[in-house]
Length: 101
Image (cartoon, rainbow, N blue to C red):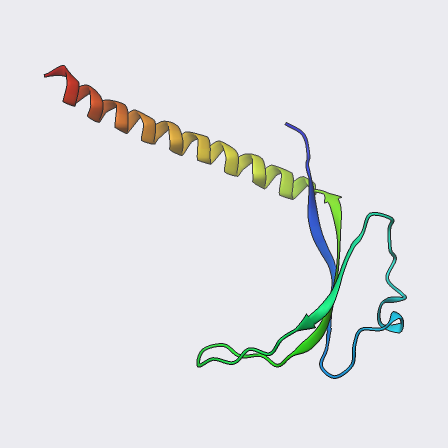
């Protein structure tokens, strides 16, 4: 299993009163396949969570995972496989008891 590419958000910028303009992002080092999302987030108000409306820009790119991310993903996969094997074995024991009689 080799390294994979995953989407990574490289820039997230918000402005309260004015739309995002070129001068806000012109210093960012764009690449051909970068994904750019620009929009307006409506205000939201509730008892527990509220925010004002704002303009936003998000720039993301597909990047290869780092060595640490790769090692963590592999370790998590191994742990998951071991847990699933343990659960299958428990289920096997229960079924064996049920159908042996």
